[in-house]
Image (cartoon, rainbow over all chains, first blue to last red; front, side, top):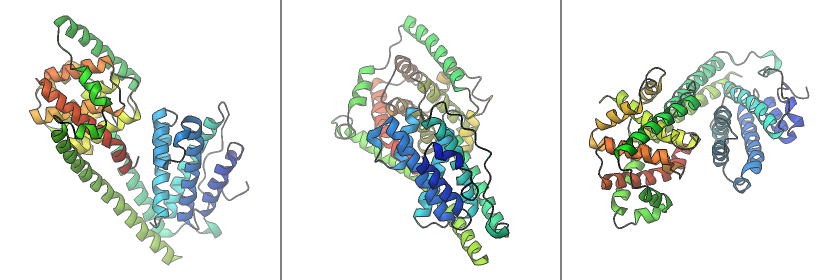
Length: 273
Length: 138
């Protein structure tokens, strides 16, 4: 192993630049967690660029979040990997914008990066047998057991935040993690076909599909300026914007509270050192 | 109608719409939950409970049509808007999805004009989704 920890040595033969960033992050998790998170964010961005270059090269200069969404939509990036990459993106962005972070946060994101790296290696070199040893959190330097009480509180805070984010994710998704989506789709489509047959036999009308297609083809500006639908659609837009804003504010407030609690613990850790 | 009943009605109607087209995409997946939370005003616990194993599994589409038939007019319009938003989120609507929208509209006793208004509003909401999804962390 050429750096402390060495969790990412396996990655060099698949992408040396990504492996280098990961090893730097691994080196910094105890001494400078902000830098570790910054390196991990850069690592994820480098991975995303490589993958986007394979799938949709025109998006290569987009924001990281846009690239990740595009990879998700294309089906290349699974939900587990996307969650890990978004978590690294979020904490990396927070570090870049001056929000103090802690070693427990950096170690969690390092573990996420290790999981993503295994998937990434298999993706960039199809058929490769990628089987690195299990992840091991880097040891603290000089036998330091890791910051004592502040470290324990940082761990507890990370646990609580992960539980909250997981709850939010579960609430937002259309299907649950344990749902067999294929079986569910098969059942619902079967029911729909049966109902379709009944509806056709009964001569039940269908909605105006031409109108649906027309609205699909219109630009938003065309809709908002439309003589018949413009006024009501503007009102609907304003209402929806307010509703989204209320929802986002509550979400942002919870994230901000987490960052502020984490910064307080980071400051305490520095004072103790 | 309780919040849990509304959430159950919504997620069943939305899942059916998503499943009536191609493989449900990430865009449709996230749109449905965001709509439930932000527009229908349902809390996280209720959304999770509605999707819990054993709760929605036993319900059929006929049950769903009966449930949408009991919604107050304003809520029914919101549900129809959300269902159409799923189609607009991926800019595509397959024949089974057209039929599902028609069945829901019939169950809600919706006039053509009401349906068209829901369509236009759905298109407006769908155009806002990518930005909103980013704001809540991807």
